[in-house]
Image 1 (cartoon, helix red, strand yellow):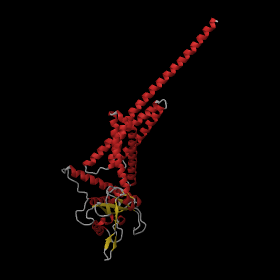
Image 2 (cartoon, rainbow, N blue to C red):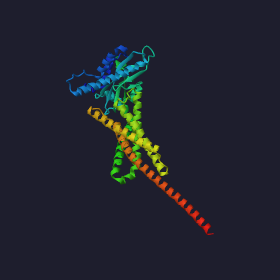
Image 3 (cartoon, one colour):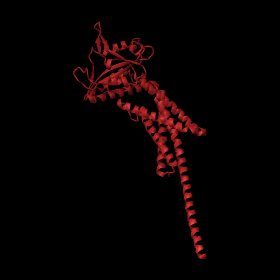
Image 4 (cartoon, rainbow, N blue to C red):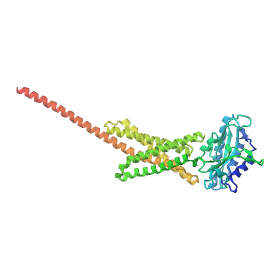
Length: 413
């Protein structure tokens, strides 16, 4: 939520420290297992969960409430999951970061900005090294329910859009005395991971994947109506499968990222479901493409294509058509839902749909091509067999003729 009061980001963090911190001590709230509702209330208040709308309220308010309620439940579930480290109760505290747009100020001056958004974070104790908990291990849970193993992980792996971040030092609202003897909050500024060069390169590759996959699909479909375009199909296939490899790799990476941050990888989750479908459909697409190469090699070298090979190739192509089609429908539905709900649509989502569209149409082409290769192979096998039979018959006839000639010669003598 954007700050409506014209104060600097550093002043906002100071205000939080004045209300939630105490000198240079690390402050914790303790919750037992039977105090889950207390934790839920605090998280709800922090996220600004409104009261449950009445049944007569419009759908937009109901959807907003349900969305925020789901976020609260997800955060509480992941906070309570950290109790495995402390044996039952949890020790939790609220902190925050301020996201500052990258406009005029540098990262070192970001804390002076009056234009910022406040993003709560929840730090949870993992272990206690001494009574002060000064050096205890902490995990951090953000508003997406992502769990970070420590503060450095949060700084390097959060999913905040490209911006400067002003945060309490080490994610903890602790202070130090200034020259006037007043306690001042300790802060640190850093660039969000989305603004760093590595992430920008990945985002650029996602955009390239989306564009190349869309162009490859267009050329592939165009070849049906313009046969001269078939001469560029080998290059189109290579480009298309490169985008498939990228989409599979990115989807597998995102699944791993969700596992590392204790997010759901269930098929019930729309994001995880798209990553799973893209991974499976992409791997099947690559396997189907490899099977076509083997099939073509067997046909060129004159080998007989058995029914088992035919079933394997057809099975791979048909299965891939089904998975890719499912992924396209799921992806379009997910993107449409995000647009209707006012949620951002990532380049990766569109790139996944583009890659799956190429895989779908290419598998359709492979299915037809496999039928043609197998039919030609069968016709050539039959023709070779006829020629062999004709050659055998001709040889037998010549042998018979020679015997008859030799017998007639013997009789005349």
